[in-house]
Length: 205
Image 1 (cartoon, one colour):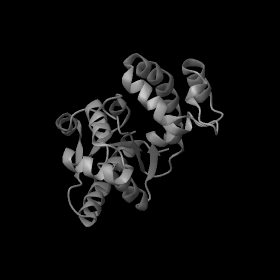
Image 2 (image 1 turned 135 degrees about the vertical axis):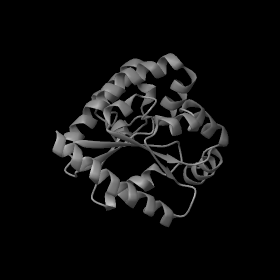
Image 3 (image 1 turned 90 degrees about the horizontal axis):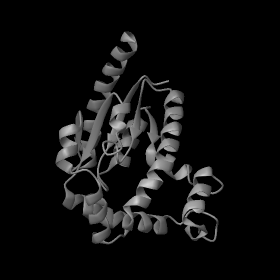
């Protein structure tokens, strides 16, 4: 089990996955909150059954899988439904994350959570790392990657904690404005720092 956990976060399109993969290349275990969030509502899961019981079978695609875009639209337009969904899924996600943390074999592990600060997950980690990018760049990269409208991106950005607030909360910041080589350099420096911190945490525990 990794005794030292780094919480990795950043706004939409900031490059969290790219940064996480660079840490993985260095042998670090990744725990991905988004991936776990998809697993707890996959076909045949308890999570999906409860969503259908609440919203009706309209939430299913013909394949029997969750209609994510319809669910997203529903909860964006009805805050009370978003609260209901969060109350259902967050405990399931946390349990699975905890299990993965206990199974992690690297000296420290990285927990990737887009809503790390918003959902209070920063209290569950030893250190927080923010991948930072200007809103303008976030929009450009997200549009290129996901082919979504600017309005949808604006809605997502507005629903997340502001960039300045995240910057004030994070222990460490990776600036993703530059080239990939600069990103690798920043990751390598932080990796060395986290190894030292994880080692000292291991010796004092």
